[in-house]
Image (cartoon, rainbow, N blue to C red):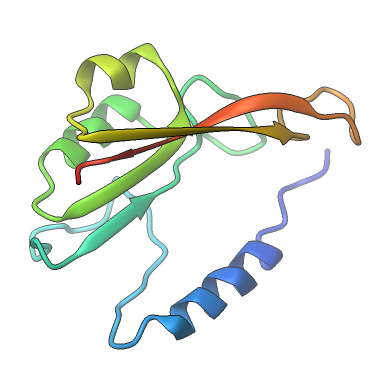
Length: 123
């Protein structure tokens, strides 16, 4: 099977980092990161494997992720597909949605399936 190539994403991420002066940027496992020093001046963006999806990589414990997010003292944003678990348990302020085409969700390479991406925030 073909594996996800993070290189193009990492190049864009590093370019964005250059735009952010005096900013600490890390890529870490959200379930293992120590958030004890995070406060209202910090921001966390999380893009976990989406709840209810299957891929060539393992998913995460979304119940635990929600517990962590709901207790953060900083601003946060979370990407995913809309789902009942997040609707019932995630304490968010805003939810933004956009429809796009996804080859990942399609069964055949080169074919696209419409998906609705969701971004939840606590601000």
